[in-house]
Length: 147
Image (cartoon, rainbow, N blue to C red; front, side, top):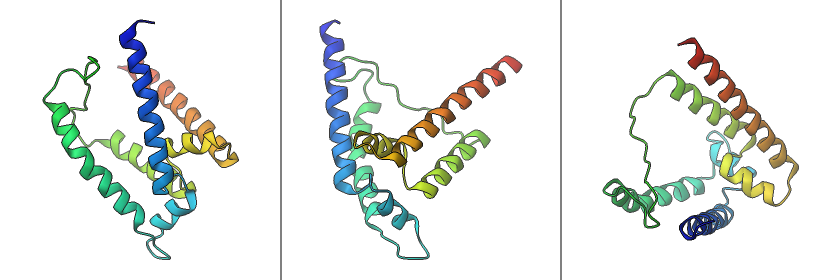
């Protein structure tokens, strides 16, 4: 493995660990806390809205800087989304994500954090998520072949 690739892997690992620690400290890896945030008609807990708002506010500057660059500080190509189209696929994907999040209080990143502590709920969630991703890829192959 060449030196720049090793640096990329090292920084990816470090960034993932910091992100996971942040999820734990903010309570976003706690399904009960997430479900309390989503319970608008009951004992609503707005603390995750503050966490998400803070994360968005902090990320504004790095994203603005990234838009002006072609390469990262490690020399890798920066790939930011460019589409602003809101279509049926985006809406259905957002609904599927929201329904899953609301049913179990877990989304993909916290699922991997919870998987690290070995929770059965996280294992089931990750297996279901991977199955859903495989089904999506299979349906995409069918859709592209029909074009």
